[in-house]
Amino acid sequence: MAALPLCLMIAGCEIIDYHPYDVRIEGETEVNAHNIEQIESLCLGKDTLRVAVMGDSQRWYDETEDFVADLNRRKDVDFVIHGGDMSDFGVTDEFLWQRDIMDKLNVPYVCLIGNHDCIGTGEDTYRAVFGEPNFSFIAGRIKFVCLNTNAMEYDYSRPIPDFTFIDSETTARRDEFDRTVVCMHVRPYADQFNNNVAKVFQLAIKQLPGLMFCTAAHEHRLFQMDVFNDGITYYMSDCMKHRSYYLFTITPDGYSHETIYF
Image: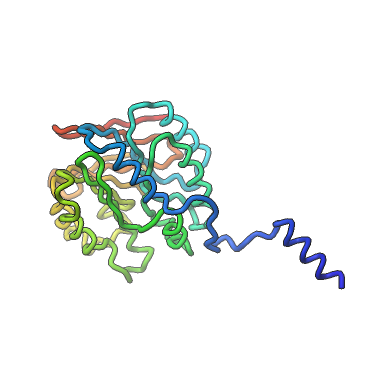
């Protein structure tokens, strides 16, 4: 007879923890969609954009807090792109902890999906918290096309990268943008990318109007590379452990970038 009151007491005290891969979401969901609405509204009609790009925050919570504090001291950034790998093991709480840190930014942000974010039920959590792994938005007259390129995590069983999505972005909302930036977690010829289609991928994204440059993360080091020797530079972000991020300035005449250390 004593067992039932004990069970009720335990349940009432809320000390039972769910399985770490149980996709139970507390707090904000559809983060990307909400922030994209803000980005498009705030940047409407702007001819110059300032965009911060970072990635791989996963286990570096204190450093990510410091990144947010550093960015919030600036008054010249329009929005932030997180290049993926918010989580280390695809655990639900990892996404929520990182989301809550990034939500302290004074400017809107979007987050791509990384290969670590695909572990276990990570993709389900990513979809619930942030939205679809392939998405795009327009800031000023620049389209940002954000792609899931983590092919190896799916054992090449799904179309990653999704060429149908990429092709659709060449014409979707065509009258609203003139140039394009492509963002991904894993660049071509890095591990995790489906390198059987690397050249096809590059041909596909070069069909996007006015492709300027690409961003990636994943490799935990800061570097730039003209991967295909065709004039399109890929900018790879470092992980948060090393306390840096890119700041891109996009003007009607082109773009420039600088590395910010914090």
